Image (cartoon, rainbow, N blue to C red; front, side, top):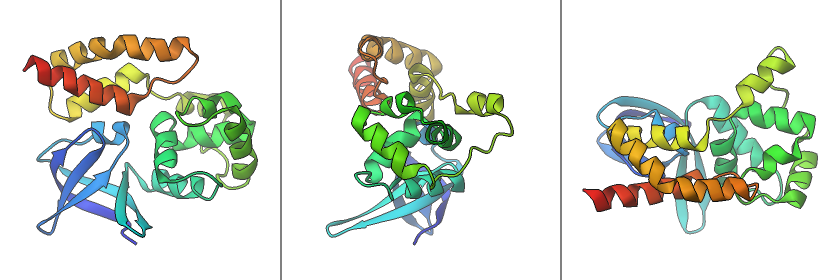
Length: 207
């Protein structure tokens, strides 16, 4: 297993970071929040989990070992593959997921694209004794740590991480705001990865 990769960031894309390790470019699948903290040309260290399939080897990257551990624990639940596990961590940080499971917060799980009401109920049952308790000392602190960044903040940070100027990022966020607001009006979490792709397309059209 590849536990982590460390090296210079060679390239960034909407869902992938390429880290140069010993002269080899390692493509690592990352959530928008993780990508937002990376900068091309700078050194980075990502905790990683290698997912092996018959026809592919995919490396998933995380900001720290805790995220990687939760990513792997989530996949012990039936019906949860690496893409859904990463989507859960894109919407909620590890402590937010622990808090949601420990308190039976069905709504928090249905905020993740791909998880419906029945799926959330099943996950709450299966994960209850697997994720452990939130790290916060009090419920109040846990709740504060659990609040994920808004879709616009995640998107703006991801665009800045990809090398766009702050003004360009703000304009791109405004371009995709109607889609995000439509999702919120329907009681759903705005799909940040899809919004990021749409934002990048709008930026390419204006250049």
